Image (tube, rainbow, N blue to C red; front, side, top):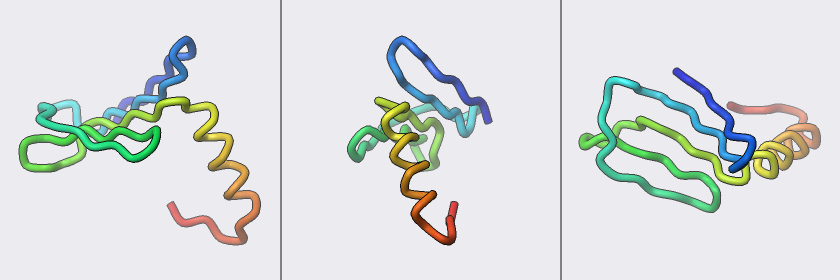
Length: 68
């Protein structure tokens, strides 16, 4: 797994499988999941990452248990 953050673009990229090729992608809000031809996750991109992660931290601080 490889994680990269582009500060200028505010994009967090998480490479899940470097050996697989990307065939298609789907997105929900600011999260884009790139998939292989057999629908395995290959790459995860989080747009507006600082906003996304800030919201995640706030939500986790309000919760008694955190499930990852």
